[in-house]
Length: 484
Image (cartoon, rainbow, N blue to C red):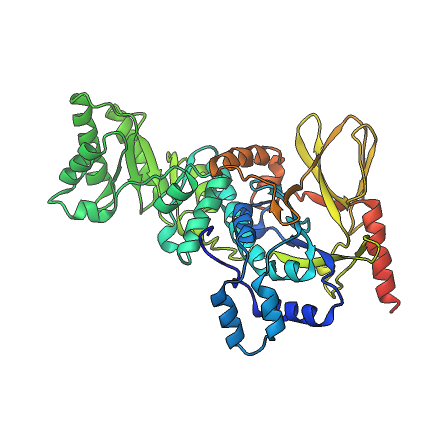
């Protein structure tokens, strides 16, 4: 992505609005936009933020090439003076964001843009495209990894992804959320993550018999010998032939460091238990049993409940497409406009649907933890000029049902600001960690969730509260709107 000019990766109305601002505004006023989402995907109790590095690359490379200008000119809807303005366009604003791999919740800004309105407007589409996709896949992958209860999850979805970019950046997001490897070789090279794989049924079928296919593969890859045993008959042919090859390897003095079988069809619970008994009886108790075949978090959870002896899982289609929930639903809304004296004037969007009413103003987010357990109690959105101290009691209330209140005593909780500054007056001031570093951070982040928030059915809701000052500002704006 860093080698591509994605400036025209935007909706046409962003550009027509830009021209409208250019023609009708006395100044290119500074505004604040928030990118957030309204509901966790997949029925989850949380989501995982991902995609920030690609947003950074996009903003860094934001410019209109001569070819871009020629194309826009050919549409016959843009005036020459506006196109001349675009020739020298670059981003000059500030961006704040929650770091990748962070556990996040609905309605809190994942990205905050403070910039001249034309700049802030243009980048809306690409920011949402990038953040929505990777956060969706990371959230799905986190659920799959949770279902596996410590077993390794391998991302195997490239051939089923909705195009090359979805496969590539989906693999990146899956690694962030906890996968141990990907089959996507390009993702391995670009993001420096482990690549893993075995062989296909065609490998077996191309040899005179199954044993010869297994033996040839084992001779080539003795340190990573996972044999696919379901091409003909899993228990009568595949597992016995695999055992024969493992026995010959051991007798030849070849170290069996990483070896085992893969199941890709049939009753995975039954077959894995039978295969485990056969492998153990033959003296191979440490042989891996891996499985694939349209797995997702629900099937993995069910298989483990049935006593399946699988310890490594290859998950493809359902992960890389987030098949049960194919959209993250992130939005990008105006929150404030800078007034003539440099102060931000809060703005609010109304809706017949209460969940679509936005939170106004220049905001920051604090995460509130139970000090003893280091688990998340709530997130607190407040105005940027507010300050909090762990030395004082903290009062929280539900902004939808404000009579529901909680008071945390000083010394019983800790606070953590979530935003990091990414761009300062157009210059990137943030260095993205490597993907495997983000993965380590993400796993620690998931440990700060209570188990009740991780369950798949009716997960416990983590509240995102508003400060009293922000709540009062919101109510005041709502009252003004209702009065006309």
